[in-house]
Image (cartoon, rainbow, N blue to C red; front, side, top):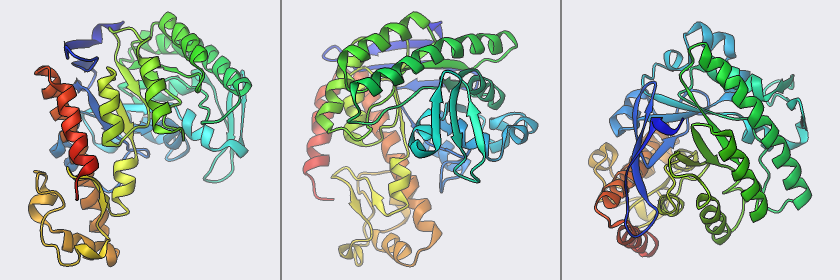
Length: 377
């Protein structure tokens, strides 16, 4: 089942690697950062913006789309691609993390995740099979199993209980996915490694995931409030256990530091709302570090956001103008800052691919972080 993923090159000095996935809506080069389009749209960006930047895959969310507009609407549109007019690939999250965030309003059982809608309070049950069927209806190119995510700091007992559900749900999800595939569905199922911050539970989870033999594997339950050094430790430990022939996906990371750390551990895929969410608040990436456009020192700065960036925002608009847009609460400010941030991360990943191909990823990472963490934006 791993043949849809091809590893092209591994850096001789670390685990970083390049490759590509063959998916129903075209090839996706890896490592890859996926913008998050929770509701079938990447906030503040158009489809043309995403294509212009060069994204080959974006992420949407099963939980949100199931609740609104509803599966019957998307089915009538011929699937999510037709509904949102996006002809490249889409990965859909199962909704497990969103249900996890609704802790006071949900109940986990063998049957699945029962919860009350954050929209109207209506009661719903998402089963492992149902989530697969919904994602097949969406025509997701990659779909995720339903899992139980636990936050930093939970007890071992809670972590074990969550993992037990995730393990059982994976087997049921795989059966449902195989049934959908037999009917012509071409999307790939990814299992999710859980286990919280207990190494033996992570190891147990990997054993079950490897035995299930899904096309790809995701590492869940990281970047959930833990210190950076703990993230690095458990990322390295978990990644080292994964089979090399399958694509590896770390869910929910979107800062340059975390992305480069993941690439160095052989991770192929990552996503996060961070670049667009913070962009809408005026927070932008530059080669010399991140800063906020709203700051007073930008009032008379007619230079670009980042002098090293080739995006259209940096070519055509000044910091002073962007600050003005934020201060006057113009919608354009969110559009431009979000575009720049996504361009910046996509460009970072493209540079990382080149560095891996030239066996210089570690010096590239060190050089980038030295400037990013020590510069003056």
